[in-house]
Image 1 (cartoon, helix red, strand yellow):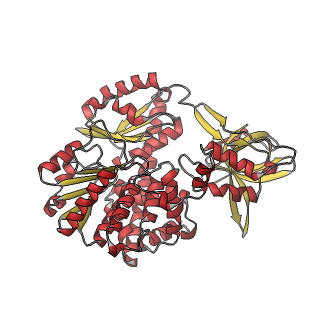
Image 2: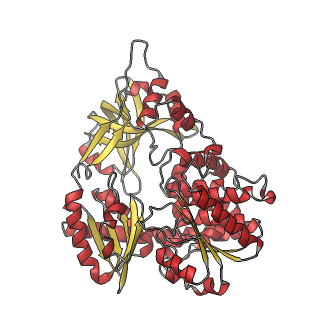
Image 3: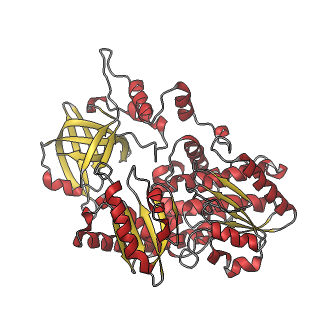
Amino acid sequence: MQKKWQALGKLKINDSGFKIDDLIKILLENRGLKTKKEIDTFLHPQLSDVTPKNVGIDLAQLKKAISRIEKAIKNKEQIVVFGDYDVDGITGSAILWETLYARGAKVMPFIPNRKEEGYGLSLKALQNEELRTKNPTLIITVDNGIVANEAVTFANENNIDVIITDHHTASETLPDAYAIVHTTKLCGAGVAYLLSQELKGKSKKSKGDEDIHLELAALGTVADLVPLVGANRTIVFEGLKKLHQTKRPGLIALFQQAKVDQESIGVYEIGYIIGPRLNASGRIESAMDSLRLLCTTKKERGEELAAKLELVNRERQQLLREGAQHAIESITSEGLGARKILIVAHESYEEGVIGLIAGKLVEAFYRPAIVLSLKESVSKASVRSVSGFNIIEFLRLHKDHFVNVGGHPMAAGFTVETVKIEILKKALEKKAESLLTQELLTRTLKIDCELPLSLLSKDLYNSIQQLSPFGMSNPEPVFASKKVTVENFRVIGKEGNHLKLILRQESDTFDAIAFGMGEIATSLKSGDMIDVAYSLDENTWNGETKLQLKVKDILV
C-alpha cells in the first residue's frame, strides 16, 4: 500500500524566536480559517448562531412542518416519530419524542428492525403490525426519508401525512411529503434538535429547558462522523458541557459500564466507547433498547439497559472480528487487493456489522469497500470510501442495478437482487478502474507543519486545545519531526500490537506511543534515526502528568 506525507504549512522561526500564536495561525489556516471573523467564530462558537436559516433549512417547509405538528398535538392525533437504528437516528428520535411528549402529544417512537424492515421509511415498515394498529395520521422521520419516495406515496394513499427530517444526500426527485426539513450541514440529530427548538419556542410550557437535548445532539453529531465545523462544531462544543453534567440515568449507567469518567468525555470517548455501545442494539437486536436507555427516568431501568447493551456490544465485537478476518483473508487469497474497489459477499456476514467490516477493509487496503450480506432473494450492502471519492455519486451512476440506494459521500448502503450481484460487481469494478486514480488510492497523512522537538511544551499543548473538539474536517493537529533518535522501544499490549518509544532530538527527550504499529519493532533498533509524525498528548502515570507523542507514522 502506498502512503505519503503532505505538509500543509511551514513555520518560520525568526530572530525573535518561536511564538505559539504563529503556529496556531498556521493550524487555523490549514483548516481554511483566515479572516478575523472566521477565526473568532471558530474559537468562540455561539449556540445562537445555530439556526435553521444558517444551516440552509427551507424556512417555508419548516413553518409548514411546525404548523402540521401543532395541529396534530391540538387534535390528539396519533404521531409516530420514525427513527433510524444508528446513534444519530436514536438520539434524534429521543429528542423529538421527548419534545412532543412534554407538549402532551399522543406520540410513539418507532425504529425499524434492521433485519425485518431494513433501513428507513419503507413499505415493509409501514406495514409493521405495531405501527398499523396505532393508526397514525402523522409520521415524522428522523435521519431518514429523503429518498423514501415509494413509502411516502403509500402513506399519502392511506391518509398519513409525512414530515421528513433528514440530512442524507437527496435524489433527483424528492418524496411527495407534507413537508421536508432537510440540510446536509448537520447530522440527523442536529436537524431534529433544531425542529425541537422551534417547537419549544411555540410552547410557554417549555420555557427555560432550551438545552435539555443538546447533549443528545452532540452524541449524534460525533457518532455520525459529520464535519466538526460550523454549526456541528458549536453543537459538540456546547453539547459536551451538557454531557459532562447530564442527569439522564441511562447515560450515567452506560458511562459506568464503559468505565469512562463522565466529566472528561470527549469526541474519542463518544466515537470509540459510548457510540459503539448505543449502536450495538440496532446492529444485533432492536435499537429500541438504546432509545429506552436515553429516555428512561429510572436509575434501575437505566442500569438494566446499560448492562444489556454491554453484552450485546461484546457480541457485536465478536461478529466484527470474525467477519473482518474472513473478508480480509478472502481478498488476500483471491488477489483482489490490487483492484481499485473491493467487493466481498458472504452469507455469514451479519447485516448489522457489514459497514464496520467495510471500514476494516478500507483501513487494511485503502480502497473503497463494498460488503454484502448474502440472502436468497435480496441482499444488503454497506459501503465505505476513501478521502476524495464521493461514493454515493459513484453508486448512483448505476442506480438501475439497485432495489434502493442512499448515503453520504464517504459511506452508503444499498439493496440488490442477489441474482444481479455479479452483473453489478463487474459494472462497478469497470467504472472504478476509470475513476479511481492512483493518487486517490494513496493513503496521505496530512502534516500541519514540521517542528523540532525543542518547541514542544505544555503551553503549546494547552494552546492547541483551543481548537478542540477535534473530528472530521477539524482533525487533531499533526506535526512531523525529522532525524529523531530512537533511544529505546518495546512492544506492549496483549498481542504485542502497540509500540512504546523514547525519542530524542539533540537534548530534548519525549515518550511516544504508537498504537497498532507493533510490527515496526522488527525493523527498529536503539540508536536508529527516524522521521516521526505525531499529535501532542498528555499521559498521567502514578499521579504525574507529562507530554507524550501520539505517533501517526514512522519513516525508518
